[in-house]
View: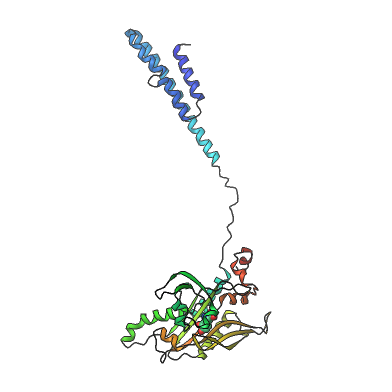
Length: 351
Ligand code: DAH
């Protein structure tokens, strides 16, 4: 074996030893690098005769080509090895069944809210949304419930550590009634131009569903609960309309004509007269039972004034009902708190 053959052999061997591209490049440097074996041999040729240079040069070139061929082969082998390793590491078994993602569904109270909105929309009511962090004025004073009025204690509430323009802390609204004044105000502002030009303002007919907050917790009360306010104000809207609208709503909501409604006298600062509305089931598991579903009444003249309207001209009714309560009744749920525990086993029954 010539010295060149053994150099080629040595190179091939050390390339085969290299396990990574970096190791391979290091091995290569020992042969064809700046001071590699082949490069050194080339330098050594300077001392040779012209004849010898030719033959020796050709032989060295052959050896160099052989080394480069071996190098390229090893480069490809290493790249291939790397690819195989990567494919193995990222192996994907396409025969595995996919992970099942159960379809979600609406919360039972949301189902009730949607139902309420649809029924009232079909009767020509607008659906409005309002803030849960309210001013003292909207939650109480504008509803004829001034500071220090004893009726305030019935709705003892949560306060926010931030004061409004009136210097009184904001509250988490204890009912949706503030939406009566908010919405009416917007309505009056919106149609003010037309009214000036002699066009009558359209009636106010709205519901305002949403979250409300009170310091309460038992089977039929939770500190966060839902209400849906209703307001119909015009020039000739009476208690009779309240009865027709509310009875119609309940019959559609409970899908039963077999319901009796009772308007029981009550007190609210923002209505006069006021009534609580009970419904009685005539048949089924709840037959004979009266259940309170809402507070209601004829809007108090002072509240109409606070809306920016003339109580001599505008008259109407309002009500506030409990969608959580309606959901309990509709599905026969005995504890309100179940709605807010987030237990999928309970919630999935409503899908
Ligand atoms: N806001 C009252 C409550 O939370 C319910 C209520 C009563 C609303 C009479 C009304 C109403 O609009 O007219 O207890």
